[in-house]
Each structure stands twice: as structure tokens, then as C-alpha cells.
Length: 307
Length: 306
Image (cartoon, rainbow over all chains, first blue to last red; front, side, top):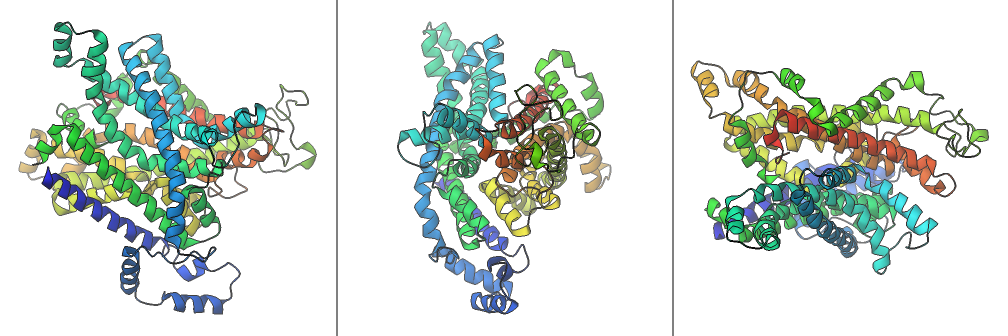
């Protein structure tokens, strides 16, 4: 197990270093970072001065070394718009984004497990087919459109829930649903297919033969094993959920990293964009690391297999 | 996705390099899979409408006419058949804009999923067949790319390079190659040990020849399935970018921007944003149904892994 953890840690560090390299390269995509970061109406003289001040004339490797030296200290430069260090600006908005993503994940999981199990137990019936069709529709709805339609119905027409902002539980409901629907659809299908597979296993037949009540066979013997792949998929989907959050946050003006980053992109505030891409990608790497370690504990076959 | 590789190794054990993909595709009993048939029909309708847009669109999609602004669809009072789905705040015909919007969405998605396939399949074959440090490096690149919230990476790149159809295809390709690389590597790894590959090797076939003539044909089924599902994913991503103002720039109509523009008129003229949203949903649903159907019918063993 120790070597497994160490190997996963090394891989994760490699990925984070890679992430920072990509973030560094981003500003060079356009050719000249100085032109990119200065306001569009700047004079050539102003751009030249900015370039010199930022050291964009140095060889690229020198710039990369300088960038990495700052990056390990968490310094991605100052926000052009806010005049403060970019990283803390992002980190301060992280709790709002996490609140939203965690709420959506909980919602999706709580609905997907019973739906998936039910579909698997009623395989081939109209419930199953209907459930799977609904799941596919859920995977095909653009989250931002769903968000707008829900705002229209629940907030504008019926006045039940607030249209935007962050506050109590009522503010959380609509954006969390908008993000959760796609994930829920995916997880429902996954739970269904793994349940079907597990229900065909020998140990389920054994359990039934022993005369254990069907309720217990399903919940204790089948569901527990069917949930293992769910853990991995949730981990892998975390990046996707953060991505949906970026869009949904803008619709609901939810004061998280997503909304802030979109504003930074509009304002050409690239240090903030860089810091944001770095923070979110690192968060995904961390979550996946945690998931893999949890997975190792849940399923002994994994850690034995790697040793 | 982690289990993809493991599951694929047993998917490919029985792969036989004799029947072509097309003959397998034709042998599909479509009637056995009503959902795939529904999906296929939806896709066919959307593609036909997109191709015929210049012929069937009732109006110029970009022509503004303020005197005709905010006309409702024909079934609502005040609407008529001149603008079947109504007009937006600039008096542009919603139906015509949707038909033209389908063209740009499909063009970007189909091409980007194809470019992603070319890059991903090539890298996956190299990684799976040659292995070694190159193979490991390619897989680390896959891990790296999967770590980014793709929409954020796409937004940042589009913002820096400036939005255009070409840049969007490029960006979508960057988000699309990893899944091909992973799956192709997995299948290649297990196929490489099979007799038909080894006998080709013994008879002196070059590495490139083995990859293209012996391995690639066996990979076509999963590649086609991934390609289909990737098109659906890219349409959603492209429309999200467009919604956020970083899609193909105006005046080209896109579904995502129509939605964004209609947002402010939701109570007054809901149809401006309802119809493009439905168009996205129906198109993506059709492609997903078709992709799932093809997957189940071509090779049921792929079911869990894709």
C-alpha cells in the first residue's frame, strides 16, 4: 500500500508541474504576452515599457524558471484589474464554488443510486426504459439552458426561489440542480449497469440460496459492490462538474471562481485566468488522488495488484 | 474511465480481423434497437435541415428588421407563418437562425471529433504498440489533459487566440483526443500479443504496416462509437462557449449565442431562447441515442467501457 501511495503521489506531482507549464504557455499562445495584457488602445511605447518591466524580452527558459520560482510560492502576479495578488483572489472564491459543486454532487448521488438500483431490479420493464430515456435526456440538456428555464419558471413566474446570488439554502437549489442533472443521468446509468453485473455474480446466488431476504441481498451484498466503480467515476467527473459550475455560476451570478474567471477573461486580466486554471486543475488532481487512495482502501484487489 | 483499459482487453480477445466495419454496420438489426432508430432518425433530420438551410430558411438569418421585432411564433396570438418560430429583438427570424446555427454547430463538432480521433488514435497506437517511455509519456499527457476543467482551458485559449471557427475546432480537438488515446492504447496493448499480429511481425511487416493494416481495422468499432459520442459532447461544449460570448463571432448565428441574446427577453419573448435550447437538446439526444445504439449493436462488450 505504501508504494502505491508513493507512486500515486509522484504521478500527481508530475501532473501539477505539467499543469503549471501549460498555464505558463497560455500567455505565449498569442505570440506577445505584452500586447495581450495591455489595454487594446495602448501605444507601442507603453507596450514596450510593460514588456521590459515584466521581462518578456528574456529567453523563454529564463522566463519559465522565473515563473516556476514564483509559482511554487503561489505567486501568479497581480491582477491587472484589482491590483492585488491573483492567487488569493481565486482562493477566496473557492469556498463558494466548492459549496455549489459539493451540493450538486450530493444531490446527484442521492437521486442516482435509488434510480439506478430500481431500474436494474426492474430490468426491461417500462420503468427501466423510461428511466434510461430520462437519464439520456438529462445528459443532453445544456446546463445553462436548464438554468435559464428554471429561473424563468421558479423565480420569475412563480416567485418561489431567488434568481441569483449566494445566500441560504434557497439560493443554492436552482444552481445545484442545473449542475446535478447531467451528473445524475450519468451516475444513474452507471449504477444500473454495475448493479446488473453484480446481481449476476455467484455470491449473490449464494446469498439468496442461504435464504437472506431480498432487501438485504440487494442492499448489503449487491449495492456495496456496485458502488465501488461509482467512487472512481465521481472522482473523474469532478473536472467536468467544475466546468459546469463555471457556466452555471455566470447564469446565477454565483460569486465563485467560475464567474470571477469569466469576468477576468472578458477584462483580459490574464494573471487571474492563469491562477484560476492552475487552482482548478490542481483541485481536480487532488480529488483524483484522494479518490484513488480511498479506492485502494475500499477494494483490496487494487492495492494487492499494484504491489 | 480507468476501467476502460481493463475491460477493453477482454473486448478485443475475440476480435477477428475479417469482417469490415461497414458490413457489421449493415448487419445491425436496427429494429431490435428502437432507441437507436429514434436517435438515427433525429440525427438524419437535423443533418438534412442543416444541409438544406440555404434552400429552406424562410429569411436571411442575419437580416435585421426592427419593425418586425419580437414577433411571437405562429400559434400564439400576433404571430403568423411569415416567421413560424417568431423573431428576436432585432427582428431576425428565429427559425432561419436556428437552421443556420445547426450548420456551424455540426461543422465544428464533426471536424473537431475527427481531428481528435486522428491525434488520439495515432498516439494511442504508438503508446500501445511501442510502449516504453514514449508510451508512458503519452499516457501522462492524457492524465495532464484530463486534469483541466476542459471548458476553462477552452475559454482561456479562445480568449487569447480570439474566437473564430478555426480556433474553435482547434480548441475542441484539444479537449477530444484523450479518450481515443486511452481506449486505443488499451485495445492495442492486448491485440499486440495476438497471433495475427505476431505472425505479421515474424513475416517481416514493418511497425507502421502492422499498425495501419492489422491493428487499425480492429479498432474501428470503438473509434466510431467514441467519435459519435464526442460529437455530442462537443456540441454541448461549443454551445456553452458561444453562450459565454466566446463562440464563433457574429454575425454567424449560433445556438449558444441565440440563447444568450434571448435571456434578457425571457418574460417578454421566451421563444428566442427556448427554441435554440430545444435544438441543442434534441440534436445531442439524437446523437447520444445513436452512439449508444451503435455501441450495443456492434459490440455489446463495449457497453461498460465507453
